Length: 359
Picture 1 (cartoon, rainbow, N blue to C red):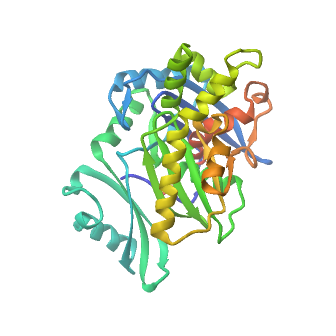
Picture 2: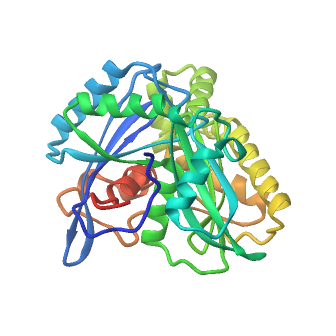
């Protein structure tokens, strides 16, 4: 069964494996007397076509990259948490009459057509989380339902198992980002915060209030589209454009201004889609007051994207810092600049925060 994030149980930590469209990232955390410490972060590129629309298209290639990543990183943990995102994941909120979890599970399974776009639940992995009482009807409760076709889940699980690892938890990218935010930031009950994780091919949006997810949406735009357009415009390789997108074009480069202008221009589609999604949330929820937007993922490092979103939305926009409360091991500090590593590592850190005894 698909597992949504839940309360920690005190069991051992897992390795977090963030399988993206263009990169696989590995995160390992340890607990110390001073708190949680990032002890390992490693990543390897993933060839185009291995992951397509959130589905494993080349399991052999994915397994080879995962195996190589663990070997080169020196990670010895075999139990891992992974996640998925994109159009393959269906997330719905629904109201139900008050009942216990066992009754709710049976009801969702038997009447799935009312809540999910699947006729045959035997082909679907799903999970749910009771969010609390319906604010307008105390006899009802609010429930978050997450569902994915079994064949999609099995594609990831089989590739991971073939690499000699044991997938213990399957999460959702949006909720992994939320886990990191709640670990590092103070949660104020009335504040509405928008978490926007801009990946290579998919952007995940999660609107939260007081630790509760109010609205989620994934759309197929991300950093790859920006990189490809900039590379074509400036006549450089994809590798050069990607490096420059994250690190910035050299100060002495005559193409610097053109590059920065191109980045902002090409990121316009991502910003527009985020703004449209937030406008939709505002109009359907009646929630006009948004406290801030917090960006993560490689796309968060696009120069100017925060200012662009601030001007469109009229709210503060910041880049998530997963190291506000999570420390970086001293041995890794020199090789891991927190400013650029943090946004890239967020999903992996959220997965590595999970434990074997979680729901």
